[in-house]
Image (cartoon, rainbow, N blue to C red; front, side):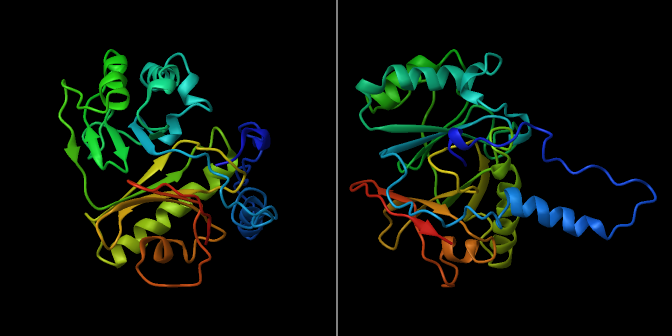
Length: 273
């Protein structure tokens, strides 16, 4: 999830050409290695700066479930055809002085017929879900939920439990996210299945959150030992140890965290994996 000032090449610049029908398969690993070196986990820029405290302070993180990364344009919240994210982003920005808590908006995957349907809204660290927000409801939703800090009457907030993992996969915004993000999601899902955590840990692609050039970034919301929900931003240097460290499954070598907040005491820190 890179800073816009470090935006990646235009779409297509780094695409691998399809091999000719009679071409040997041997060069492909080298091509994949080159892609990883330029946009993946072998980038020279990784771990060249101290990132502690670099994530902008916020007390509440709102995720709008809307389509998938393959359909997201580079600036989803400013695209005319995508009215729901555009209007929600505009409403939150317009009411910023009135918000009860400083709020960050991010888009995550949403598809009808799944647990997170199109238009669902997840709010952390409150751990609640509102279902079925439409562009007609945006102003009222922001007024009731984010300004007045009450319930949105057309919907009923559902308590959500377990851990929620969001991985930036916004490749149309930054090629690095498009390369690192899917690999991280695959690795998370493998570890979750291996550890029997299905139903306890949800993993979703999310849109660009920015702040620095160290894609791919991971945001995890989960309860601590006392049941208090914390939100942590992780900056991985490798996908090997990421899930075990981030989910607390085991204790590999980590030097972890990027940003952390709880319901009562927001704080900043930074995590390398």
